[in-house]
Length: 120
Length: 106
Image (cartoon, rainbow over all chains, first blue to last red; front, side, top):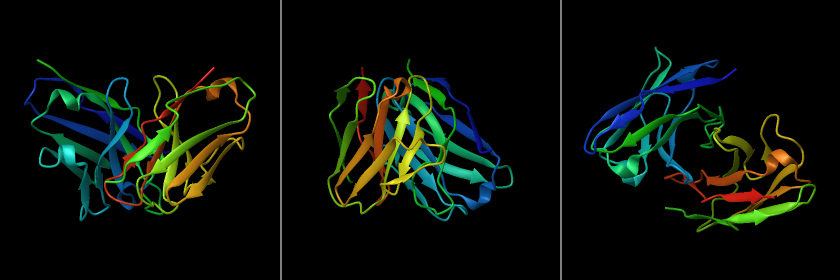
């Protein structure tokens, strides 16, 4: 069974940094594209970033380009999101998600999410 | 960026009724369209991918159709657990984009 567990969320001041982690199990992590998706309180879903199996391709939503970095460690079955220069608008639940083996970029499996709150 | 527009934002229906949710793309996404269901306080769940393929363990009352720019999600007979929020998502182009969601309420 696919299992994705996010961690690293919390309260951070505007301009601060945070690193999210996602521990994956139940599948061969190195074979799949992975994603981060976020959801602001009471709002809809927003895709944040994707990373290819070997890290050779990374994609970001415009609002986080230059501030967020997606990465992975296939030896540790882990996905990461380094978030710098955080703004109040980055406050959200951040979900780790896995795409299917076909590599089509829909989100087949989701973690439970970790809450990031940016506030002074 | 491809803008995904869902309508209506809220749909008021009765249990047992048939309901159709709409999702429109600002440009063609071929059949690269997924639907998700999100219950309050829960993680989104994949319902439909490739516009019309049901995901694993999704009941047959859920069906998707469309291609290009116009898509629909149909729930043939609403059950109590179906009164939640639904999102569409295109994966034809970067950035991946979601619709704003449709809330189905009693």
